[in-house]
Length: 167
Image (cartoon, rainbow, N blue to C red):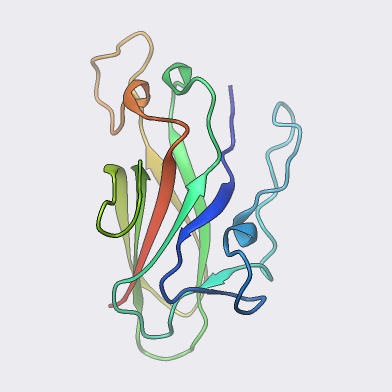
Protein backbone atom coordinates (compact mmCIF):
# COMPACT_ATOMS: atom_id res chain seq x y z
CA UNK A 1 0.00 0.00 0.00
CA UNK A 2 1.47 3.35 -1.07
CA UNK A 3 1.09 6.30 1.26
CA UNK A 4 2.38 9.84 0.88
CA UNK A 5 3.13 12.14 3.79
CA UNK A 6 3.24 15.77 2.75
CA UNK A 7 4.70 18.57 4.84
CA UNK A 8 1.99 19.83 7.19
CA UNK A 9 3.59 22.72 9.09
CA UNK A 10 6.80 24.65 9.62
CA UNK A 11 8.49 23.76 12.90
CA UNK A 12 11.83 25.62 12.76
CA UNK A 13 12.76 28.01 9.95
CA UNK A 14 16.14 29.59 10.93
CA UNK A 15 17.35 31.65 7.93
CA UNK A 16 15.44 29.75 5.26
CA UNK A 17 12.91 31.63 3.12
CA UNK A 18 10.24 30.99 0.51
CA UNK A 19 10.31 32.09 -3.12
CA UNK A 20 7.08 33.91 -2.27
CA UNK A 21 8.87 36.18 0.19
CA UNK A 22 8.98 36.46 3.95
CA UNK A 23 6.08 35.84 6.28
CA UNK A 24 4.59 32.89 4.37
CA UNK A 25 4.51 29.22 5.31
CA UNK A 26 7.49 27.41 3.80
CA UNK A 27 5.96 23.94 4.12
CA UNK A 28 3.33 24.80 1.49
CA UNK A 29 6.14 24.89 -1.08
CA UNK A 30 6.78 21.17 -0.52
CA UNK A 31 3.31 19.86 -1.30
CA UNK A 32 2.86 16.92 -3.65
CA UNK A 33 -0.47 17.19 -5.49
CA UNK A 34 -2.83 14.30 -4.75
CA UNK A 35 -3.43 11.65 -7.36
CA UNK A 36 -4.86 8.19 -7.81
CA UNK A 37 -2.02 6.30 -6.13
CA UNK A 38 -3.18 2.99 -7.57
CA UNK A 39 -2.61 4.10 -11.16
CA UNK A 40 -0.71 7.36 -11.17
CA UNK A 41 2.09 8.46 -8.85
CA UNK A 42 1.88 12.07 -7.62
CA UNK A 43 3.46 14.84 -9.62
CA UNK A 44 6.39 16.58 -7.93
CA UNK A 45 6.02 20.20 -6.84
CA UNK A 46 6.40 22.91 -9.46
CA UNK A 47 10.01 24.08 -9.91
CA UNK A 48 8.78 27.63 -9.30
CA UNK A 49 7.72 26.70 -5.76
CA UNK A 50 10.62 26.21 -3.38
CA UNK A 51 12.37 27.05 -0.12
CA UNK A 52 15.75 28.76 0.00
CA UNK A 53 18.66 28.56 2.42
CA UNK A 54 21.21 31.33 2.78
CA UNK A 55 23.56 31.62 -0.21
CA UNK A 56 26.56 30.80 2.02
CA UNK A 57 24.95 28.65 4.72
CA UNK A 58 26.63 27.56 7.92
CA UNK A 59 24.44 25.06 9.78
CA UNK A 60 21.33 26.72 8.32
CA UNK A 61 18.41 24.60 9.64
CA UNK A 62 14.84 24.12 8.45
CA UNK A 63 12.42 21.62 10.01
CA UNK A 64 8.91 20.71 8.91
CA UNK A 65 6.36 18.28 10.31
CA UNK A 66 4.97 15.49 8.13
CA UNK A 67 1.35 14.43 7.89
CA UNK A 68 0.52 11.26 9.81
CA UNK A 69 1.03 7.89 8.14
CA UNK A 70 -1.49 5.15 8.84
CA UNK A 71 -0.34 1.74 10.04
CA UNK A 72 3.41 2.27 9.72
CA UNK A 73 4.07 -1.25 11.02
CA UNK A 74 2.39 -2.78 7.96
CA UNK A 75 4.36 -0.75 5.42
CA UNK A 76 6.78 -3.17 3.87
CA UNK A 77 9.52 -2.14 1.47
CA UNK A 78 11.41 1.10 1.22
CA UNK A 79 10.46 4.46 2.66
CA UNK A 80 11.59 7.12 0.22
CA UNK A 81 12.05 10.83 0.80
CA UNK A 82 12.28 12.59 -2.58
CA UNK A 83 13.30 16.17 -3.14
CA UNK A 84 14.86 18.49 -5.65
CA UNK A 85 17.67 20.91 -4.80
CA UNK A 86 19.06 23.71 -6.86
CA UNK A 87 22.17 25.73 -6.21
CA UNK A 88 21.10 29.04 -7.70
CA UNK A 89 24.42 30.93 -7.83
CA UNK A 90 26.78 29.84 -10.60
CA UNK A 91 30.14 29.98 -8.82
CA UNK A 92 32.80 27.54 -7.66
CA UNK A 93 31.30 26.97 -4.20
CA UNK A 94 29.26 23.88 -3.49
CA UNK A 95 26.75 23.07 -0.77
CA UNK A 96 26.20 20.08 1.48
CA UNK A 97 22.68 19.19 2.57
CA UNK A 98 22.08 16.94 5.57
CA UNK A 99 18.56 15.43 5.46
CA UNK A 100 17.19 13.82 8.62
CA UNK A 101 13.96 12.00 9.40
CA UNK A 102 13.19 12.52 13.11
CA UNK A 103 10.34 11.82 15.49
CA UNK A 104 9.13 13.96 18.40
CA UNK A 105 11.17 17.02 17.39
CA UNK A 106 10.48 20.05 19.59
CA UNK A 107 13.25 22.53 18.81
CA UNK A 108 17.00 22.64 18.18
CA UNK A 109 17.68 21.84 21.84
CA UNK A 110 15.24 18.88 21.98
CA UNK A 111 15.60 17.43 18.47
CA UNK A 112 13.78 14.18 19.26
CA UNK A 113 14.92 10.80 18.03
CA UNK A 114 16.88 10.44 14.81
CA UNK A 115 15.25 7.80 12.61
CA UNK A 116 17.53 8.10 9.57
CA UNK A 117 19.86 10.64 7.98
CA UNK A 118 21.83 11.08 4.80
CA UNK A 119 24.34 13.70 3.75
CA UNK A 120 24.16 14.90 0.15
CA UNK A 121 27.55 16.43 -0.57
CA UNK A 122 28.82 18.95 -3.09
CA UNK A 123 25.51 20.15 -4.52
CA UNK A 124 26.66 22.16 -7.54
CA UNK A 125 24.96 24.80 -9.68
CA UNK A 126 21.64 23.80 -11.21
CA UNK A 127 18.81 21.39 -10.39
CA UNK A 128 19.47 17.95 -8.96
CA UNK A 129 16.92 15.32 -7.89
CA UNK A 130 17.64 13.35 -4.74
CA UNK A 131 16.18 10.31 -2.99
CA UNK A 132 16.81 9.24 0.57
CA UNK A 133 15.91 5.54 0.66
CA UNK A 134 15.27 3.79 3.99
CA UNK A 135 14.82 0.02 3.94
CA UNK A 136 12.36 -1.70 6.30
CA UNK A 137 12.33 -5.29 7.52
CA UNK A 138 10.53 -7.72 5.22
CA UNK A 139 7.30 -9.07 6.74
CA UNK A 140 8.50 -12.64 6.18
CA UNK A 141 11.88 -11.86 7.86
CA UNK A 142 11.29 -9.21 10.56
CA UNK A 143 14.80 -9.70 11.97
CA UNK A 144 16.48 -9.21 8.60
CA UNK A 145 18.66 -6.31 7.53
CA UNK A 146 17.02 -2.88 7.47
CA UNK A 147 17.67 0.83 8.06
CA UNK A 148 14.52 1.58 10.07
CA UNK A 149 11.87 -0.30 12.03
CA UNK A 150 8.45 1.24 11.29
CA UNK A 151 6.83 -0.60 14.21
CA UNK A 152 8.60 1.71 16.68
CA UNK A 153 8.03 4.98 14.79
CA UNK A 154 5.43 7.45 16.03
CA UNK A 155 3.65 8.17 12.73
CA UNK A 156 1.89 11.22 14.19
CA UNK A 157 5.15 12.98 15.09
CA UNK A 158 7.55 12.68 12.17
CA UNK A 159 9.69 15.60 11.02
CA UNK A 160 12.19 16.31 8.26
CA UNK A 161 15.21 18.37 9.30
CA UNK A 162 17.38 19.98 6.61
CA UNK A 163 20.82 21.41 7.42
CA UNK A 164 22.62 23.36 4.69
CA UNK A 165 26.34 24.11 4.76
CA UNK A 166 28.85 25.46 2.32
CA UNK A 167 31.18 22.58 1.27
